[in-house]
Image (cartoon, rainbow, N blue to C red; front, side):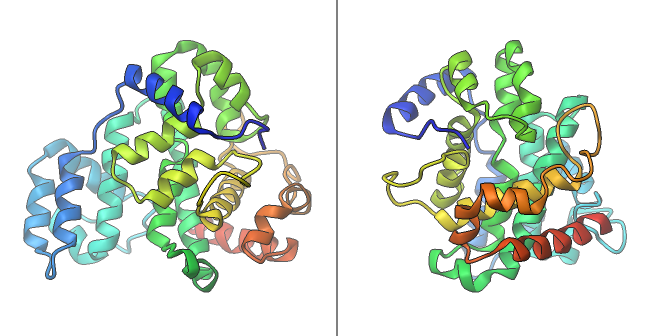
Length: 298
């Protein structure tokens, strides 16, 4: 983990960088669906209508729903079918995923690698959150929040790449954790993908705990950083590690070398992460096997 810790000055500097990047605004569809879901009796018909009004997003939603990540028993042909099959909470998650893909792009080879890692981290984080509800309950961390955190945690990387071609040299390392590049990012662009990603999440009105987790997911020393969702930060780090070791590392090879990032080695380096969730090395192995089985099924 990086030795550069987060502070108000870094946040202010990041805001200056973000003003030049022009972060994509939260889509109207997401705003309206969130508003409808806060109603006492959400209107499924209105939610379906909101999505079908935008042909591009509607098509992306169908593609995401029919992707292996959501594992539907049969192919979904329409937005109404999607709502019926998945339920409102899962449907909102799919719309958020589709809108983020639309905002960041998903056409190039680099984009596809980024999305594989992000989606696997999101699925892993959600799965882990479901198995640790009792531990996470004290901070009101839900599986839905865990999914959002995994989905958005590296969202700044494609934006920084589009802004600065020089950033391409860092993208593989940023997503694969082959080396700690926060200091190098800072030297190149005056900020890093964690802080910029957190600001992006804030722009999209994600929960405060999710935004803070993204900002701090590379911070080495969380002491003195104020009120933080430490358990969600720890959960993300574990999910990120599991997604990486599943084989979606960033680089020329599709799979990492067998034995690289061994659970015992990772546990030794990240003992504080496991302690935060009251876990040990054996628990990590069990959780890794559990998520691997889930991802392999997809």
